Length: 219
Ligand code: TZP
Ligand code: MG
Image (cartoon, rainbow, N blue to C red; front, side):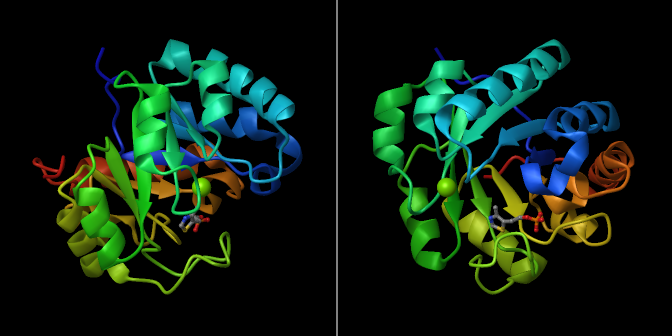
């Protein structure tokens, strides 16, 4: 069984602190209506059980909308949820172990932040890469130096995989990433910290429609 279809275009990565008192579900709901195309459950602090519970609630919102749910780091939680896939970073289980656990039927994304990581990812049969940080971000203090749109797109191309940019992206700079050839933009604060998350997602979706290249699905 092949991994489910997915669109990296407007990739919402959740953050409980950024979503605040309104809660992650309310933000995800608004973002779906606004035009988010993919959602990642990311919670570095949560224990497995509350993360599982939140994931179940998110699946109830996402399944009817036909939007895939990716789980960050936690392959065990992804499997328990029967989520659509996982995103693994450089300190998480390596890609080959993730694939062995999940099989071909799930989406696996990996983080790429350097030429060496791009070359390594090029040798894996990943479903997508997340490349960054594209711009300066306060959300992940150890993200490293910003690369800018051209450099982010170069790294993405090196991998030969479908690619999403991440880090410091918002309605003010997303157009350049789409125009540079990225299939999508992954955002935390631009949507989760927005006073109107639905409007923030709508703006990004509009930029995607206007600026994304017809042959965006790298390679
Ligand atoms: N990985 C690289 S930068 C980053 C992650 C998870 C943080 C992105 O957050 P924001 O608020 O969209 O800059
Ligand atoms: Mg990780």
